[in-house]
Structure formats: C-alpha cells, structure tokens
Image (tube, rainbow, N blue to C red; front, top):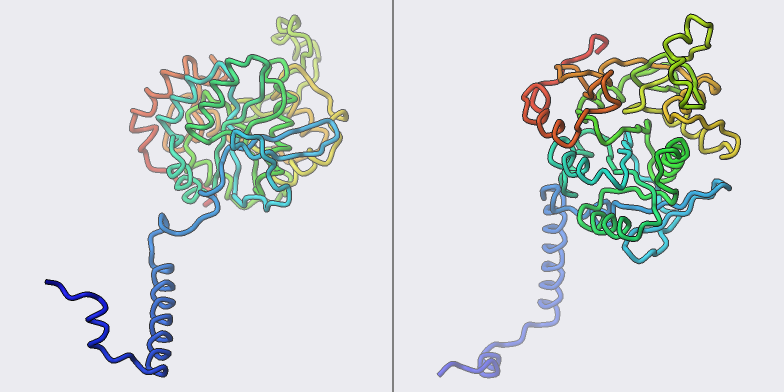
Length: 348
C-alpha cells in the first residue's frame, strides 16, 4: 500500500529558515540565468515579436483634409492607436489590385510572394522589403464579403477607404502613398501592379544603392504625351512631329519614390494636385513639378527573365503580363526566373 504524502512528510525534518532562503535564492537565480540563455540562443521563430502578434492587414481612412485615421482590421472596426510607431523597413511595396483580380493574387501567392505570414516575415527580414496588396472599397456587398474572407485567410492587405475604380487610379495612387507613409518608416515606397513577375531580392539591392539625391523617382522611364481625353489617343504617333511636348515619366507597372518625395506628397493638400486620366502620367507630372531626380533602370521592364531582371512583364504588348494568372505560374517554373543567381551591378 503506497505511503500517504502526510506520512512521508513526517519522516523528513523541515529545513531551517536560512537553508530555505538560500535554496529559494539559488532556484530563482537558476531560472533567471536559464531564461536569459534561452532568449539569446533560441531560434528566431521562438522569440517574441510584436510584428507577428499584430494583424498585418490594416484599413486606412483617407479624407480631403489629409487627416489619416488608422483602423485595425480585426473584422470589428476597432481603432488602431494613431500613436503607434511606424514600422521601419528599407522599402514598402504596395501591390495594386482590384476586386476582379482574385486570380492574379492567387497566382502571385504561388510564385514570388509568400502566401503565409511566416513566409512574408522571412521575406521582409531577408530583403528589408514589406509587401501588401492595396485595394479600395465598393458598394457591392458580395464583393466586399469575398474580400473580407480573403483578408481573414491571408492577412496581407492594406485597405483604402476610397472607391475602387479604374478611372480613379490617380486618386487611389495618392491615397496609397499617404497611407503607406503613415504606416511605414521606409526609405522607398514602391508602387507595383499585380500582373508582373518580381524578384524581391534584386529590388532590394536596387533600392539599397547609394544615391546622391534624397528626392528620387525610380522606374523604367519613357517619354509620352499627356492626353486627358482618350479619344485623342490616335494623335500620339503624330504628336512629336507636330510639336507636342513630351516629358519623362515611369511606366506604370512598377516605380518607386524616395521617402523625401512621398513626404512632400503627404504635406500637400489633395485639391492642389492636377489629375490626368492615366495614373503613370499623373505621377510623372507631379515629379516634374517637384523637380526630383529621375533614375531610369531598364531592369524594371524586362520582357523576359535574365540574370539582372527585377520586374518582368510583356512590354510593349501589355501593361503588365498578358494573361497574368497563367503567365506568372509559367515564369515561376523557369529556372531563369525563380532560381537564377543575382548578377552584381557594374557600380558595386
């Protein structure tokens, strides 16, 4: 028959108060040192991190008074503390998407953009770049319900409180830069479309280059006329011969603005901007007015994967990849796209 705890206790002489105190001190010291050693040697996956605890998807309310209110997207509309410190990264990449682009997002998450939060965090740690899908809102309750479900599943969105319409892309772009600046303390803010094949590692190297200008407009530059009326598109081939003024601006699928440039955009009143029908032309006009440094890099508009390509899309056939849902998957299977080593640039 097993002895009772009371019987065993009666057989042992109680320790003296001094011995008990010494034992407790030694035990607490042992626990403290063990915890310190574990904290220093544990893999990063076991360390406490506020970035993994907080939701990544955030709704940003943007109004004409330039007052930015941040709402935590916990599906309950709870208000996020506006005093919260901006997340520090080297570059923030906003992938512009829409309600009809769920298939593109699915293909992207199967290729260069991780579909899980751990993968996104590893990508950010290795490149210094944070990635989020950027989308507005719609009055269609069915579409909003589908988006809410996707946000809950992947948690990789930045939601703008602005109507999602192709005709309002310049307004969405300005809202994106303002929201990104409010949330992220970044050296560059990158606008990218959801139909390009991107190499984040090479984009990171490009953004990390030393530059003599604090105000930089980085992209694959082109010259083109400004048309506010789509009916005048036929005039484009003749515009140079007839003396139509051209100015340099980046192709729309991907370009980047340095922090100083975005800070200037944030400081200006919304109604002080001239909006054109084309988003890339609109940004180009603003950059011209701000007299920023234009940096042309053709690796941002390669028609095929090369050892130096950063963004691949079907230039000049399509503004992005033609049939992107399929093409993204096909490109990712090519070793020259997903697995080729990065070629060092000539200036490094």
